[in-house]
Length: 489
Image (cartoon, rainbow, N blue to C red; front, side, top):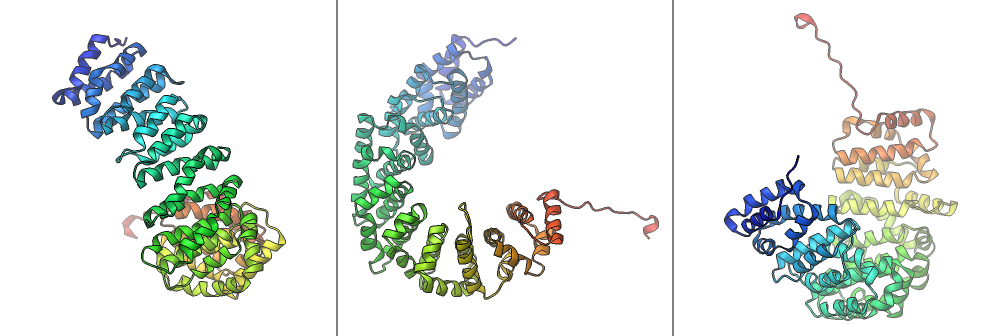
């Protein structure tokens, strides 16, 4: 029968935990006795001054062990939160040492992720004391605040504290902008409350600091995900300002930092609100086409990324077909040559752009969309087969193999694509050849594409071979039978 640790034993361990020479052994002993700690003893530990002395002096490994000891037990004892645990977190967050603040932040994050709850007061402290920390787990902090803050976002204290933190440097301000804009993606009704913070972000976008402009524009792009955010961006004339400040300006070394995000800003608007944006700002697509010149490979690759975003929706495909026919024809005829000569890293992006342009996506594929994509493919290759895709799949680099499979998957969404697949000699045999599978991720992705193909209407012998492959699984290997003959014969 386990002997429950008493208060005297705990206090002895706590005192030794605060002493550098005995810290490691005491920590190990505390962890080993964790199963024998009841809630009453655990709460005594949380209030112990020695525990905070230890947390102030401990290294990162010791903090990790302490995190297991304290937070695992906290979830066991307080699945719905507790005042005692909130007081512990509060003491951590208001501690003068940054590492202790971070330890408290870790605990708050664990409780939020497990839906155990964190007090409103502690959320306020996280804003005031953790957002400005120079060395902080930024993703952990932002994810936690995005999940926990919406419930109290309208409280005056929350808004006041967020505005107070904006008085710090640009790195800290961008953390606030990211928290707020990410919340507004899921809770657009909160935009009027957040407007003072968004206005501060817009003022930062006007400053002569290219790195700051780059970060702020990327964050503000999140607002385009909702109709409310789109309307707000339009109301402050940001679509025109981005063009005037970043797209139309003569290229400079510094401008190359912000130009990619300016193009992505327009492409994101066309992706998430295609009907609205393309009808009101059709000239934005011209800006993207203008940057597809090979003079600057990096900007060119980003322009193709953006073109793929624009053309990934049905509305985008129709717009490109009806209003950018000549430029699309030029781009498509140049693409095979670009794919042949460009470095591997860029080649993948160009293939992914093409996959987006030809994909049916999640929207229904009607005759018009199928006709547009078939015309684009035939304009590019001058053929009615998938030899170009097959040649890309033969390239021995896993990233290019996977990208070529993405392209194949996009194409066979269409009936014409399935027919072109059948017109391509030996393509099915090449796909079904397991001896060429040298990368786990490519093998799994190839299986998914073959599974899609097996559900298409193809010639019976092709369909049967594909279905056999699927039934055997992605990583099937045929057993090798060896026969040993006596005498070495």
